[in-house]
Image 1 (cartoon, rainbow, N blue to C red):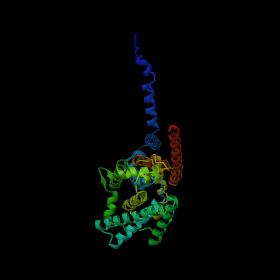
Image 2: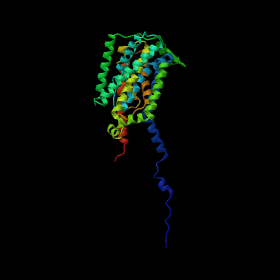
Image 3: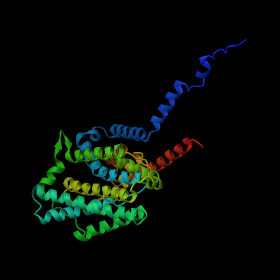
Image 4: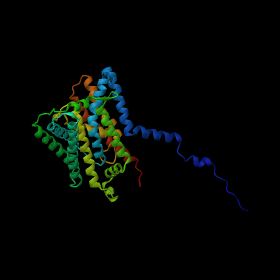
Length: 350
């Protein structure tokens, strides 16, 4: 006599399935701990706080426009630094590259009379070429000579700034074509053209890093250089290109800085690399490589700008900006450490 086994109730296996509320809670936790969410929340809190403290002056159109202009120049540097940090490198030289590119740009424009768009465009080409050349030198020394990125770019920082002072005799140059100065103040729908340029660069850089083979190779090199070599990625050439991009963007920032301020301002960019690195790290980039987004950098870049503007309007000296930027950078590095520890804890044991 055969017996049939009765089917097990469905509720027995259902009890092993994860609870929907637990899944929702876990998803919410991941969202709230995401670097982009954290930095966006911090920016909103800062903006609201300074609006309450400083009133209409802080949220007035002139101040918003000034913050956008100040942030746009640094954003270009921060995007280049983000690319470099994603490869587990670093670039301390961008501020000096900006100055050197601006100086050569003015020299070139002065040589052709510093009048009209032909002179301005010549200055742009020279600035981009100078920045790209210094960036390529950084990349070649890091990739092919296998030198430490911090030491290399620290050396370039001093060399580029020294050469700029040699060319100018230590004096700022002000021979900017009027059309270029007009470009620095012109607006599209109330938005300064310089801000529009920076936004377009950020958009293109974000797409390249996120959605192209170049971006995937950049992340791969930062995550594991040896594995990238075994995968057939031309690591040395790619690293050189990444540093070249950082220098190229610094050159563009140098030309735009001339358009906005009308002078090379040799002594005014000593903290630019610090500000750019702060933006990248606040936006979620990791000093250990393999992690970082341009979108995060854009939002992270806004925090020091808002802090500096809010503190100045509140009556504090502008020198506080240096202290605040340093403190924020330390905080960003600490957040990077916390994120790495969380990833280590969550990594499944084998």
